[in-house]
Image (cartoon, rainbow, N blue to C red):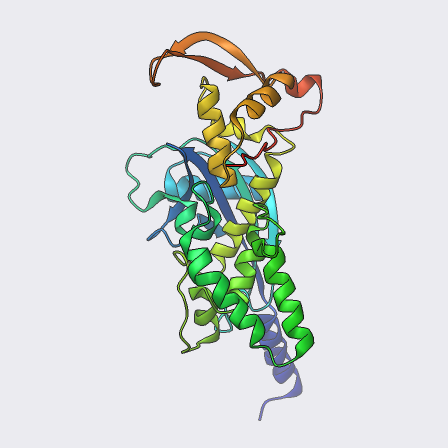
Length: 323
């Protein structure tokens, strides 16, 4: 028969294991190539670069940089902390250990590292096809998602819940003349998840119900983390000139505009955009031209890094096109 001390030790051990917590570092690394916003992925393009925070890491950022470079061969430049995800059921009940994910947003230019065949760059619209409005309202949104969301809202048992759901859908998806807000990426994804219209929702609930598989799924809650990164970047380009982290050393104003449009998923007014860039002294002429345009050669510009020391700048703004 076990004595009380031995039994207490075993109970303590079980309690410690049941309350064990680990921290993962996850990177949302963004580039824009040929007018497409791209995200760095690993595996079968179903995961973001990530790894556990270890005792040997000097800091969270150094640990993140080490994991990304080890998994992709791509060194990180600009990064900022994004969000900490710690929901109890975010990974799945089969995991005994509680996993907290500390995510970071990184901005870079796309490069293919030699000798690394386990990573790649994918358009973020592969994961969120309803977010690209540059060519008008995406068919998947108008023809599939919105009707199913409204049916889901009307299927609530309680009248107050039906009203709440409809209001949330209208707000997030720009219904009832509210207009599309490109920043609400996370709210839209979470609504689709709640309505079981993305694969991650049925996977988590082990549901056999019919579901519209909207966009490419990702492991665990990596698509939710990616949505958070997109929303942060879409907001931030309006008040900080972070878009220049994605640009080559010299660029045309049209290339700059196309990059902003790619990130926002919206078209912007050309002349108003150029006027804003000029008024804020964000760029300066590089003294060169490029022939990679239709018609006469276009001037090349570069970002004025001194502007960051001169004053707080207001980003690139989004003078949206009415067309």
